[in-house]
Image (cartoon, rainbow, N blue to C red; front, side, top):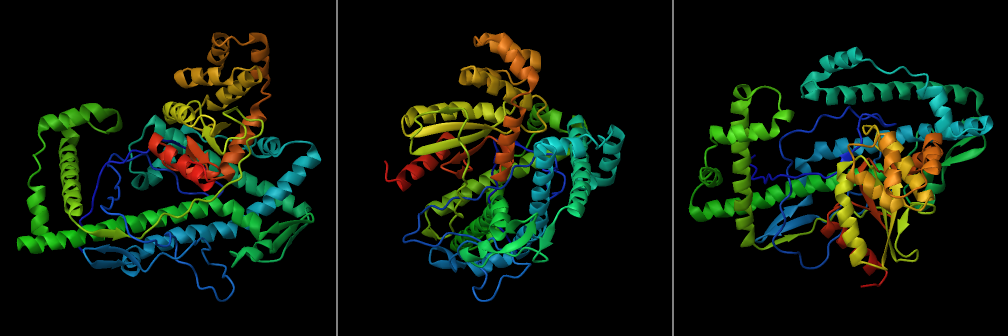
Length: 533
């Protein structure tokens, strides 16, 4: 079937945590592709009236939830998703085109829920064992799992690459090697952690009431007890609260799939109308527009190669043809995007698909670096990494927001050092030491300004630059007394679904658009909820 799709460049400004490590074991992350990601086109007119927010279709209300239910729906989307010059585009036809993609996403939640009950049981057993030994859970895991798990060698990483390079779709590099080593290391640690948990189960008192957790059919069912661990209950609410970030992520992805398919169908309706007006086929219209693109020259290709050669495998003569094709397709996509917007500008378009509502998380803000009035009606919580370039780039945005909303916004910072950033964790500890000595914000500014030089000697040097007592600062940093504080922050971030930095929350709701405009809109909406303009 012909698709008149819009393809434009979309740059994500985050430092992402490697997807290779998770209790839920996702596939190893692929290196970033060079092709731009598709971005849905915007509608030209806002719909009149109100429509239900988009989400995963709700399951039938009658009957108990089944073990294989997704249980991640909100409200059912409207039956008609758009009206284009009187032509209706329905939910049924949109979902029919993306049915398998939706099923795969829902299956992620189904499988995660099956595992989550065991994870909750293991967590309670771990906490009990740590308490018995007089240690934190992190200390216990480090002793019993991390310290006893050998690091993968470069040869093992290379062997993994050779076995999986068809899926990895990237040439061998130091960066890829590090990703694979980390993935293999974390897989081994997960296996070791599972064996340790099995050992704890053998001595602990665990009673399971169900074979697998099922989603609650309503709020009352969140009180169901699935198991007892040393007398402590594991409830449906514990399982669902842990799954909340995953569920929302799936809701967002399904919304994006629907939005992308809806945009394509809107464009097809407009293209058909344009073709009818010209008395030609829709493909003839597309061909005529595509023909307007200037051919890509060797000079264009050489310039692109020079700008991107660090990410390209092969010399210019080898990849020239691929680059020319890539640039030609990009140019055509850009032109067709402009053509689609032109068609939309003269059309009557109503859309009724709505983004899923983000969940509200309770995020601790006590004993954290904070700016702004303690009683401000809006609180921004930022999970940050001092070695993340995107976090540094976010600071001017936050400064502008704090100035503009003076008195109405409080900014709280929590640490989320990413594993691929070797110096981020110690830098976070150093920032905490500077906070205890009264110079957190000045010190943090220096860290962001010197992200390529964050080793311990430099961290101590920066303490002198902001006028800190070096003897006290150095002793704090060397002792590692703030390591647990940083780890607690990271644990809290993981609990609320943080997997990249910077991650921002406004009054507990995650903010995906971290631009000034996006953050301002989120703050304005939060103020409006409180009746404040």
